[in-house]
Image (cartoon, rainbow, N blue to C red; front, side, top):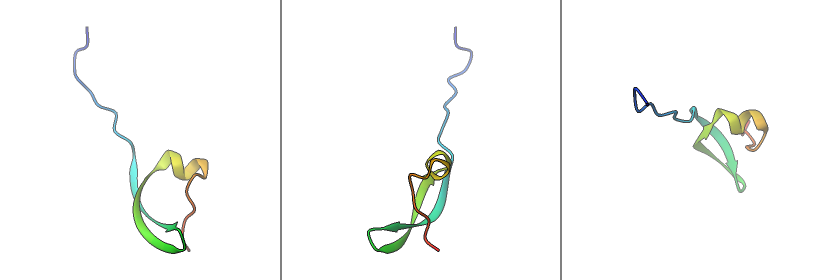
Length: 42
Protein backbone atom coordinates (compact mmCIF):
# COMPACT_ATOMS: atom_id res chain seq x y z
CA UNK A 1 0.00 0.00 0.00
CA UNK A 2 1.30 3.44 -0.91
CA UNK A 3 0.30 6.07 1.64
CA UNK A 4 0.95 9.06 -0.62
CA UNK A 5 1.49 9.56 -4.34
CA UNK A 6 4.86 11.29 -3.88
CA UNK A 7 6.68 12.48 -7.00
CA UNK A 8 10.45 12.73 -7.15
CA UNK A 9 11.10 15.63 -9.51
CA UNK A 10 14.56 16.35 -10.95
CA UNK A 11 16.61 19.10 -9.32
CA UNK A 12 16.66 21.65 -12.14
CA UNK A 13 18.93 24.69 -12.20
CA UNK A 14 18.95 27.52 -14.74
CA UNK A 15 22.49 27.56 -16.11
CA UNK A 16 24.32 29.30 -18.96
CA UNK A 17 25.26 26.46 -21.31
CA UNK A 18 27.06 26.39 -24.64
CA UNK A 19 24.48 25.22 -27.19
CA UNK A 20 26.39 24.95 -30.46
CA UNK A 21 28.60 28.05 -30.31
CA UNK A 22 26.25 30.42 -28.46
CA UNK A 23 25.72 30.51 -24.69
CA UNK A 24 22.10 30.04 -23.63
CA UNK A 25 20.20 29.90 -20.36
CA UNK A 26 18.84 26.36 -20.05
CA UNK A 27 17.27 24.31 -17.27
CA UNK A 28 19.70 21.48 -16.44
CA UNK A 29 19.45 18.79 -13.77
CA UNK A 30 22.19 18.76 -11.13
CA UNK A 31 23.01 15.13 -11.95
CA UNK A 32 23.94 16.15 -15.51
CA UNK A 33 26.08 19.03 -14.23
CA UNK A 34 27.91 16.75 -11.80
CA UNK A 35 28.43 14.02 -14.41
CA UNK A 36 29.90 16.53 -16.88
CA UNK A 37 27.26 15.91 -19.55
CA UNK A 38 26.83 19.69 -19.93
CA UNK A 39 29.53 22.30 -20.57
CA UNK A 40 29.01 25.54 -18.66
CA UNK A 41 29.60 28.85 -20.43
CA UNK A 42 32.10 31.17 -18.73
